[in-house]
Length: 200
Image (cartoon, rainbow, N blue to C red; front, top):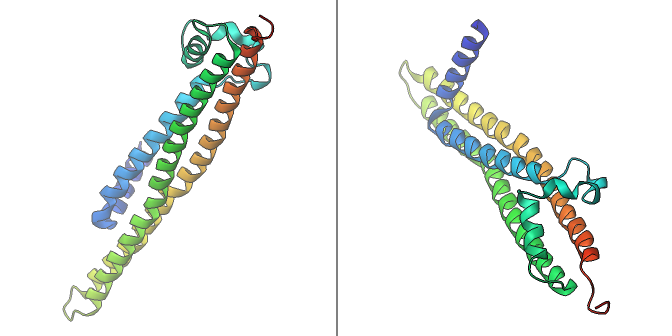
């Protein structure tokens, strides 16, 4: 319990030393990781754990609900035409790719903005330091020390937010490729179940 209290005290001290930009970095971190983990959970819910056996051996697992079931019902509903099935799968794949690419680009912009906000805090801290150096009264060293603390803390906070976020975005990009691969496997199996115009 004492360690938790000590951690909270240290976090509050660092937050105070970071200056006025720490709330902006805090909100950015919360929003960035909320969107990242939300996308991760969405992809995790629809991608099978074993892609090698998907979907032939687990086709029935997706009947009765879920994103995969809705895709299958849309692409195979009310027609028996391979071209129409393929067109619908192309439409689904294009829509999914567009959504995921937009979300990943937005997450990357948020992640790369964290060090820039930290750099802004560095500039503000250095300006505060120079203001302290130009003073002649007894508060000179307090302003210098506070400016250096602000410069270092905001830079560190920006990097601590951005580095794990970029790694998480890389993992999300891999999950995106797995999801598109699932759609391709669904299309391949679905086309085998729909008779071709020549066969009819």
